[in-house]
Picture 1 (cartoon, rainbow, N blue to C red):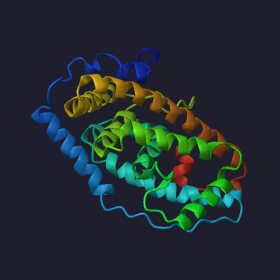
Picture 2 (picture 1 turned 90 degrees about the horizontal axis):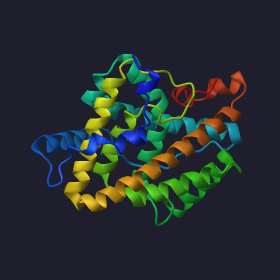
Picture 3 (picture 1 turned 90 degrees about the vertical axis):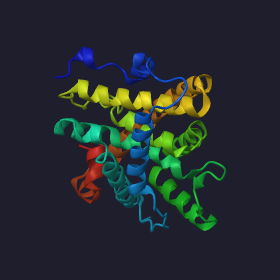
Length: 271
């Protein structure tokens, strides 16, 4: 059973002794095997992904937000299928798996989106100018003057630069954040039943991420990149809170709630 003393901030955990045993020279055979398994699991879900031009419902703001919830739900289901292939996740207590998905899926969705973001054009990779214009109009209707669209694009830009859109790094970061208790900063998030199992899983992927980056670029650059990544994680948290508060303010009637994607309804914890 988790206690208040067990709820250590995950930023501190990433900067703690989880990295003390990380290799400074090379990846072990076990590390390579784990990384290959992660890459294989991710590719099996997202590898052949094609981005189709979506038909947006722009009748009004609520219809547009419901339309967003539908394709966000489809992408989120892919993330869930990815996580279900990770042994450390499947071995967790069933209630803890539910809690981690429910409260961490939105920030994970934001991180995964940067893999398809072209920071030179400020849009989704391979979009035409016409598609880009339609998408801009759609999101302007969705979010109005809330600042969400601008914050999202700024996050995608900085994440793309800090991660260098390294697919292996992003795949590993998704798992580090998946096992992050308190990532959502939602006061309604319940205690975990086996916090030690969750911490062990996260520690494993923190160490693996560190070893991978050290192998790729050395300890000095890796240390700097970890600091940058921590800053980006804080930004993800802030935008997650912005998303959640905005959607809660928009959906106040049972009629509109019934039209919203059930998965995103749960992820955004809309009462």
